[in-house]
Image (cartoon, rainbow, N blue to C red; front, side):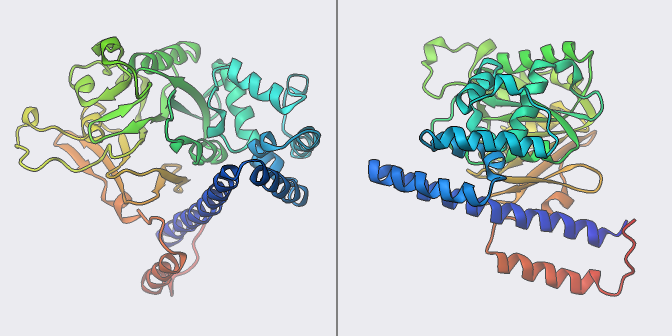
Length: 376
């Protein structure tokens, strides 16, 4: 397989992620500003959504939460149109349980998917719902991915990404989604799923929360410290890993699994003055996790950041695009942790489109021209 075409494919997907998120987040900014104007702004926003979805019926499925911003009778009209789009796509769904938009979101909430604004596509939501109701099917015919996300999103960071949708749409994984309020609850979900699937190993594990260099907050950010114990803290941190509180994760993951830390700063560099002795080094969370999970690949970011999108290389491995930084990708070996250089080289991040395309043109001139097309 020609490496030139493989790399170009990943680059092309990343360009799509950048443009898609610029459009989506630009629309979200406009939406927030219109909401701030009160009733006149809301009326203008609703009118714009009605016209937009009337001209683009697929958006009733691909951005189904927009329907929830509409007043009746438009809300029900576009919801019925969304169900028609699903039927035309050949999607199986429990029609009797989702006759209205509100009935469907309530169905999600009753099945453990409370933060449904993290899901863009109605098809993705149905995928997650099905596997929450039938967990024994997860990983039966495809690789198994598990997302455990935080129950608190005080700044709305998790409502503006396509992370879960990208995992589902990639077609490689059965994706099981959970929400947790503590590190203990997060591990409990994984153990329960393992029992339900007969011990199927997890090929991709995503844990989402608000991050620092050494911790990932899963639960409430304002939980009183008096209520926190080491065994049931609202965060996962380096101390938990060193005490072996997450040692069970090693047996739940496939040998070559990918672990994605969907959080800020978990791959930030070591502090100045760190010693060579591991016990004297305060590793970042990604590096410490890599040490406890030999052979697995850990994906993180070095800065306050968010994931713009997930692509897949020709081997099916996830390749992340972060909004404002190169990815920090690390894998442990008998010699210790090592940064995965290839992943850094492919860390083409959101920049003006012309810069990305200039880089692609320059690279193709150097490596792609004159070679036979052996994409087979």
